[in-house]
Amino acid sequence: MEKTLVLIKPDAVSKKQVGKIISVYEENRLNIESIKILIPDEVILAKHYREHIRKDFYQDLIDFMKSDRVVAMVLSAENAIEKVRKINGKTNPDEAEIGSIRKSFGTNLTMNAVHGSANPIDAKREIDIWFS
Image (cartoon, rainbow, N blue to C red):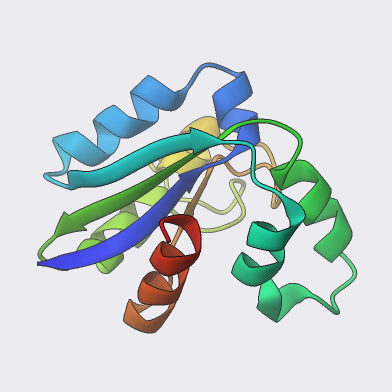
């Protein structure tokens, strides 16, 4: 059974879309192993987004992610990472597949409703950051 991290971002939380988004994962046979709601601080976000630290959009991303509550979840299933990435859709909601979470609930590259781990190494690292 593979595990992955999913974050429901502040844009989706503030629009009251959490229940709808969680339902999509559950309908696709993903199990919620852990779940919590928090307003992340700069320390967690710097660890999570470390690969973006020197990029132009980094501070805007950090400011957005700490602007409101985030729902952090560990989901599990066979091929959970691949399943979640397909369900989430492409990062840019304008390019995401019809029916994907980002197409349905996202607004732009930053406010795209959800985050999912990219691969098993990232999943372990991210789960440790958010659920240590």
